[in-house]
Amino acid sequence: MSSQNFRQLKPFFSILLIIATLFSIVFLQMEERRMGYSVLKLTREYKKVYEEKRTKEISLAKITRPQLLDTVAQQKFTLKKVQANQIIHLTGPLADSGDKVVSKDIAKKDL
Image 1 (cartoon, helix red, strand yellow):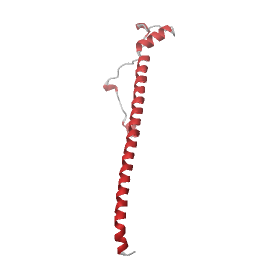
Image 2: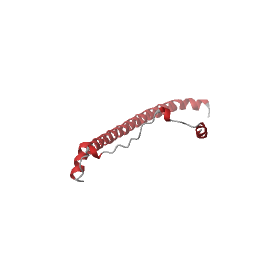
Image 3: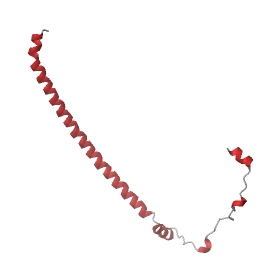
Image 4: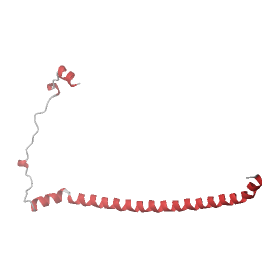
């Protein structure tokens, strides 16, 4: 190919380059718009799921509140409220700090 032929094709290549650049710009704008719609859809879905989770947490808190559990236990299961003489305390004697004796041999084996 001679330089004369190349000079004749220069305008064609420059127009081809401009057209390719414009097509790529349009393509990138379309992709940006498509990604924006995807993000919008995911945001709406996230908000919907978040609100559903929130309503379920609120309903769980309402169902498990102590007053409701007491009334259900008394009505459905015929349970009675606890009286003070029914409570059993399982605390043992308090240990003094002087009562604690640790053998050095046992401590060495634990390490």
